[in-house]
Image (cartoon, rainbow, N blue to C red; front, side):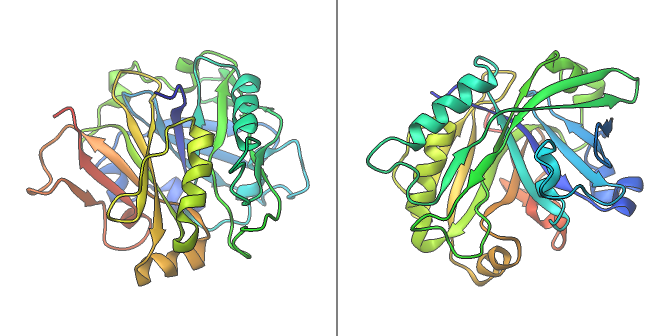
Length: 300
């Protein structure tokens, strides 16, 4: 069982969305003020879950930093369009340096190494922001570094998660023990799954790479041509998943062409039975909300 855990989900939004959250957000979730990031024109709001993870509404309120500014790991989000753009993993047992060292060692191991996709992780970079109450919180972010491997899929973005390790207390950054912040109208309790959309002919290679990044055992593909990988959460005993699946439908192929290889859908666990007899439903039929799903918790 891996010690790697979900940390948070990054949902990029424009300023009108950020300043006037739509009803699909406010009707379903309790939103907690975040703050402003140091050194760049960005801010956030949070949906905090009882499992210790959270969904971040991330907004550029001015021009994003240049891509060559190596001291700002969030600069890579500058060119992206609104929607699910990234997700962070963590390890509350090991330090940033220990976690990344272990991952890079696995990505260098024979015979698969990085499956010829050209993926490794760089050095941890310090980050911080001030909360609305003036408290400064600090962390270390470690981002993947990409090169052109034999199987790098053309111009499509290789999107794998980044690491986020706390320097200050995690409860300062993620107040998951505050029930006023973690109680949501829809009954959300945490992250059930992150879906990763990849080219059909590379699903095995991506599954191998994700297995090494997460430190999770690689299981055989399911009938849906996908691999389900185990991952933990920061608080509690329930487990979560990362699902690496092949883009096979026209909708999936179009989405991958538009947004690149990688994070496509977020599944949120809920304790409510209000799903109309279904086990899973999306928050909308179009737009960002169509990529976010509510799923009955396995603890129900």
